Image (cartoon, rainbow, N blue to C red; front, side, top):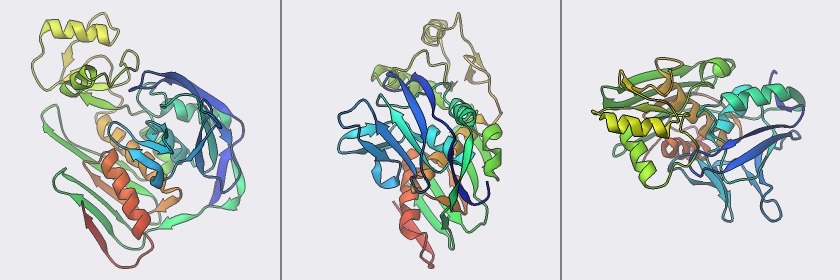
Length: 311
C-alpha cells in the first residue's frame, strides 16, 4: 500500500455479544474519505453521535478501553483498533448499535476476516506519521509496568508479561512487521485467572455468553464440584485443569497471552490517530498503562529532548 492512506471498498458487519455488558449487537464498518480517521457512530442514540477514536476521548480503562463524548460511550474497542492498524486501514466509520464491541472468541480474528472480505482501497492522500526522534519512557513502580519507545523507521512492538506465578510467569512476544499481524497476533485470545473470573462473576461484570472466549489460568487447587460448576459456565460437558490451564480451549501459541497483550498495546496506541515510526518495548502492559503511554507520546513525540515520566 506504500505510504498512502487506505479505507475499505465496501461496508461489512460483525455481530456478537459484548463480554462485559452481555449486549448482543452489530457493528458495521463503512468506507470513509482520506483524512477521516477512525470514528464510531452510535446509531442507536438520538442524533447518532460520533466519537472519534482518539486518546483524548478515552474515559475508562478498567476492563478494556472505553471512549466517550458527552456521556455516550463505546466499550472494549482495542481489538477493533488493532485489527484496523494491523491491516493498514486508516479511514473508516463504524456504526454501533449497542454499548460494547462483540468479543467473539476474545481475539481480533473475526474483525480481520470481515475487513479483508470488504477489501482495501488505496486513497490519494499520504499517511501522516508520528516520528519518534528521542526516547520516551513511562514507568509506574507501584503498578510495576514500564513502557518505552525509541526511534525506528519500522513500527516494532516487544512485550514482556510476568504474573509471578508458575502457571503464567515470564512470556515475551514481538511484532517486527505489521504484515505479520494477521497470522501471528490477531488470533490470540484474551486470558484471565480463575480468581479474577470469580470476582467478575460475583460482581456481575461478565455477562457475555458462555465465556468460551477466554483462556483461564488456574493457580490453585480446584475441587470437582467447582470444575462441574465451571463446565456449566463454559457450556461444556466437563472441564479439567491441564498444566495450569482450564481445558475449555486449546492454546494457539505457547505464548498466546503475551501475544494478546501485544494486540492490546497495538490497539490502544492506535488511539494516537496516526501511524507510529518507533520501537515500543512494554513490560507488564495493560489498558491503563497503554493509554497513559499514548498520552505521553502525544504530548512529547515531537520534542527533541529526552523525556521520562513517572506516574
